[in-house]
Image (cartoon, rainbow, N blue to C red; front, side, top):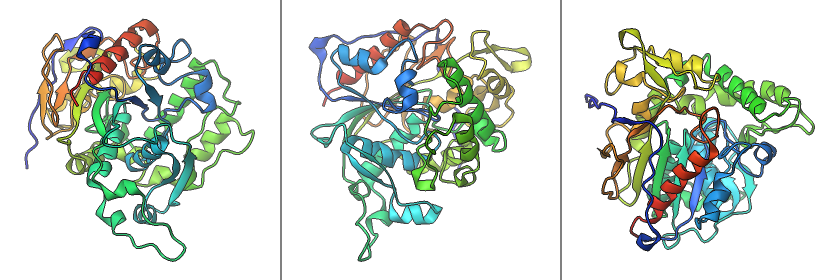
Amino acid sequence: MAVPKTAPVPATKKPVSHSVSAKHTHNEYPIVLVHGMCGWGRDELFGQKFRYWGGAKGDIQEHLKAQGYETFTASMGPISSNWDRACELYTYLVGGVVDYGAVHSARYGHARYGRSYPGVYPQWSEAHKVHLIGHSMGGPTSRTLIQLLEQGDADEAGFEPGPREAPSSPLFAGGKKWVHSVTSVSGVHNGALTADDVGQFPIFIRDLMVNTAALAGLATTEPIYDFNLQQWGLERDEGQGFEDYIRRALESPVWKTQDGCIYDLSTIAAHFQNSWARTSENVYYSSYAVDGTFAGPQGTRIPQANMNVILKPSAAAVGLNKKDLAGGFAAWRPNDGLVSVPSAQFPVGHPHEMAGKDGTIARKKGVWYVNPTIEGMDHLNIVIPLHETTIEQLYRFYEDIAAQSRALPV
């Protein structure tokens, strides 16, 4: 079947605020911030010094809480697959030990159980839903979680435990309409061209983490990061420095499996995921794409001067794209340094509507509402204030998302 050609939506210079007044409040569901690849949670040592959502200068979770929005910051495996991260996100909210599924774990050759979470929202249910805000890989991870919550998994639900085995996690039973909305920011819904280069992508991830540590003012000799790969037998040794730990992590089987971020972020894997993780008729969807490039010769795209230096090489490579994907190869050249605009807008083949330049549009469940593309920012400074982006701008942006989420009718 031919893939429909879709042009990117018009762009806007910066995040536009369309706040909803308190009198239009329709729900009190909490917000869950879902980090992307190479992300980290608040309780990890890295997060205590340099927040994924706000950097060293701010704290988006605490700002939203101060504005009256109950907010949680999830913690999941930064290089794990969408499936494994969805299982972790589920357990982060309800509490307990992560169950990746007996069938899934056997299929990919890792342990069935992972880390323990105390549970920040144990009352999570259809009566007590959540709003998910996902950045980068947090977008498809949120969609994977919704698919499992609502539809379950036949293999895992049909698993018959032995005398010393536990039954499948309730996550895999389905029937749980527990998510009210998803807002995707620079989401990787149709894959990332950078991830298609499987030889260079692990090196890109390594360099991204080392440079992020430098932005945080942290020495890489410190044990500042955890890949949360307990299911793959990768635990950080006590006192082990970051560089040594990364070296060990690069030798992990996760890089060679189809149950990790390298495969899941590829355009091929995204195609299959979009056929499986459908857009739910029970959920409101919204997306923001980011473009940090400008027009170059012969239709190419060039990274803007204010783009983070970590992202410029990949942005330049994507700006020369010749792979013909949905919308045509040229449409995939505008990017935020990691994700092309068409990938961040909506999953190909799923229901969607393009918002006007003012960002206003009537929303209904089961349809992706694609906001105007944000220009002049990149994949990092849409969550961390860097260069010309201020924490005040990010506060307004995410407060606006929170207000729009709360205004959605029950």
